[in-house]
Every structure is written in structure tokens, then in C-alpha cells.
Amino acid sequence: MGGIIRVIIAVALVCSLPVGAQAGIRFGPVTCPVPANAAFKILGAQGELDGVASEYAWLRKNRPGWRRDRQALLQRDGRYYDVLDISKGSAKQAICFDISDFFGKM
Image (cartoon, rainbow, N blue to C red; front, side, top):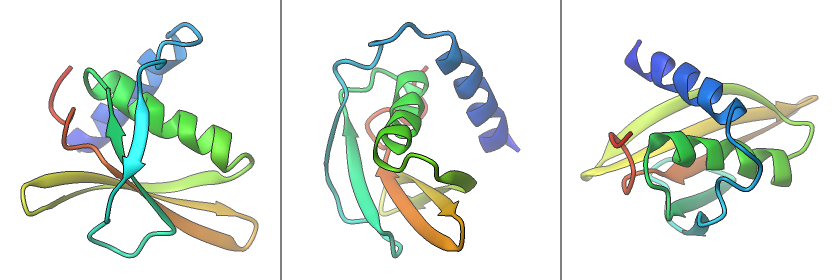
């Protein structure tokens, strides 16, 4: 339940962010602990608000027209990951983001 509330708050606040609010955020390579079509470490996020916003911005830019079906928080070996299952028609993918650097920070 806490993860759902975190996502709802983040999405609501992201909608109120001005364009360019995520300018310092970058994506680096990472190995995801579960099978994924793409995996990134989010670098430069100050907290969960801009970190989660950067995940959704990445999806809008790199997977336009895809729908978010599910989002899961994983913890493995002291690291935290958001895994987003997305789909477009019958195509399905999993996108993994290492969120350890900003997880739990507002």
C-alpha cells in the first residue's frame, strides 16, 4: 500500500513541476536483478519526486504510446529497483530503474 501512495503522490507532484525540472538527472547502465528489456541507474535525483518523475519522463521519451501496466519495488543486495511492466498492443516489456541513490528521500 505504501508503494501505491508513493507513486500517487509522485505523479501528482510531477504534474505540477515546471518543464525542465529534471535537467540534472542522467541514466547510467546497471544490471537488473530480474529479466528486463532495459535497465538504468538514475543519477542526480535529489529525492523520490524527481527520481520517479524521471522514470516516467524516460518512458514518455523512449517508449511513446506504451502503457504502464504495473510497477514493482524490489530490494536485492541492499539496492532498490523500480521495475515497470509496460505494453503496447500485444508487445510487453519490463524496464528496470535502480533507485537506490534517492529511495526514501523526499
